[in-house]
Amino acid sequence: MSLLELRNVSKIYGKLHALDHVNIKVEQGEWLAIMGPSGSGKSTMMNIIGALDKATEGEILLDGVDIAQKSAKELTDIRRDKIGLIFQQFHLVSYLTAVENVMLAQYYHSIPDEKEALEALERVGLSDRAKHYPSQLSGGEQQRVCVARALINYPEIILADEPTGNLDEANEEIVVELFRKLHEEGTTLVVVTHNPEVAEVAQRTVVLRNGKVDHEMINENFTGKIKHITLQ
Amino acid sequence: MKKRQMYIRMVTASLLRRRSRMVIALLAIAIGATILSGLVTIYVDVPRQMGAQFRNYGANMIFTATEDVMSAESVESAISVIPESELVGAAPYRYETVRINDIAVMAAATRLDEVQKTSPFWDVSGDWPAGPGDIMIGKTVAQTYNLKAGSRLTCTYAPVSEGSSDTADPEAGEEDIVPDNYKDFTVSGILDTGGNEEDYVYMSIEDMEELTGEPATYDVCELSISATSDELNIIKDEITDSVEGVTARLVKKVTESETTVLSKLQALVLLVTVVVLALTMICVATTMTAVVAERRKEIGLRKALGASDSSIVYEFMGEGIVLGAVGGLLGAILGFIFAQAVSVNVFNSSITIMPLLTPVTIIVSVIVTAIACLIPVRSATDVDPALVLKGE
Image (cartoon, rainbow over all chains, first blue to last red; front, side, top):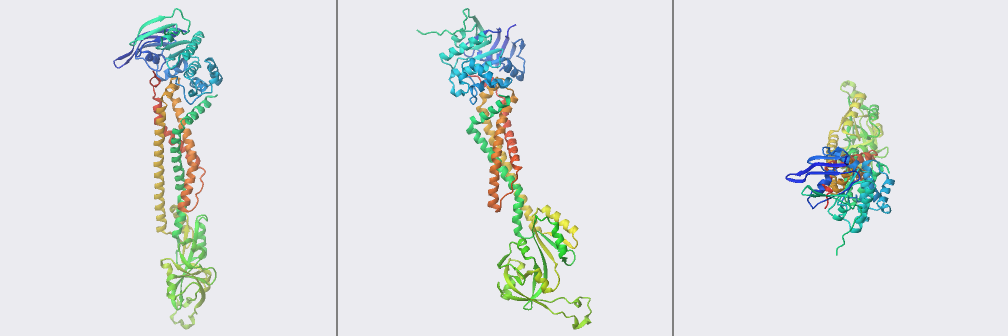
């Protein structure tokens, strides 16, 4: 059984079909990239998989449970217990330190544990920046805090929406390297990106166009390591 | 870190982070609480203050004899009914007709030290009678006899003979003639009130007893009591019912005007308090609405992380309650200073401290702030994380 399965999922806004009968499967421990041009339905799909939005029709099976028919309160519980979210714009709470931002996810999930949060920051190489506020961190560091926050409750799946969209090349590499490590540890990753270099390092890439799955690509030479294209 | 510690950390950090906006909300609450605390203090204390002011306008209760005259004992027992703390002064009067230079003048014998308490508006040129043989005369009497402070005069009193009654035998003849009594007095002061009091002469009860040769009985007793209209009515009824020979009456022009002024003043204070609290609520609601609008992304993030609506409400309410409590405490302190300043400037006396008012002010401030936060916090739960977190 797949960890995540979308069956004929559609999202319709008036006459616009943001998603049009999409079928996707994500296996346990898989690293999937979702690509597509602007307006192809990437973010809509991300919101639906992340239990932030509801599909107009279709089934979304997460760990065998159809979350498409769940109430808003049940979706909140699913987000809290099963999903780790990483955003393009980091979305850290400005008045909390790095470690407190990680503990925020614990606060809603169970009990805040500073030691565990510090360990999560150590995993992303930020143990020395734990007491810094977001404004004192670089973009790459903020995104790593975001990754630590997504990891802290051991979610079944991590969803990253354009995780390198606001990062320079060096930080992009650091974040992709983090994803590689997480994948090695068995974490299931779904990464939405418009950056081919980031998509290429995933095991599999699904390309969306006009709300439909246009095609899929399997990375035969999967290493999880980014290969930058050098312009001549 | 425990969950509660994290909650306190989030609430305090959030308040401190938005200092300028929160200071505005805090000031609004503190000003509201100051007005509330100050006006409630005045509201409660004003009857006492106004009562003291009204005591300057003369007696508010009088005793009259149920039949003929009142004995000294019955007057004393009637006075003893009044709580000592409320009694400002009690001046019993005995009136007799005396003659000065063969012209009849009405003489009033009273406790002159008590008269100064019951009639503080009396204006005396010279001194109040201080000892035996001192007399205070009304302005009219002084003009009639061309007397000044320090002048000497003789009062003549014609005792009533036993045979002078209507039932006496007209044939009794000269055997019943009683000689007049005389007493010399020194004028200590001239009384100027602008009223009938200027037609009288005033002496001590002892001097009157010496002049008339008769023990003191009283025609009327004027009392100044620091109490509300309702309390005065209770005292009046108790005296009339329990003390034989004495009928208590309220001086309605004093007690009624006191009640009217007090009730109007208290209504005004109440109205101002309600208006100020409503304005405070509007100001806090506006500030919190702006705060919620400013923090839509943060609310969206919290919801994306799994925060329930009740968690969001709990966090925002926590901020509101801290603001309410701190503003309430500030207001309670400033309110006391405000009430004290009003009391000293308007009533010329300090107010009574009410320890219960501080917790009451804080609780009311917290409730007002919580109510003001209801709508903005409700809108916070409506934030759609998918919309606010979307960023290209």
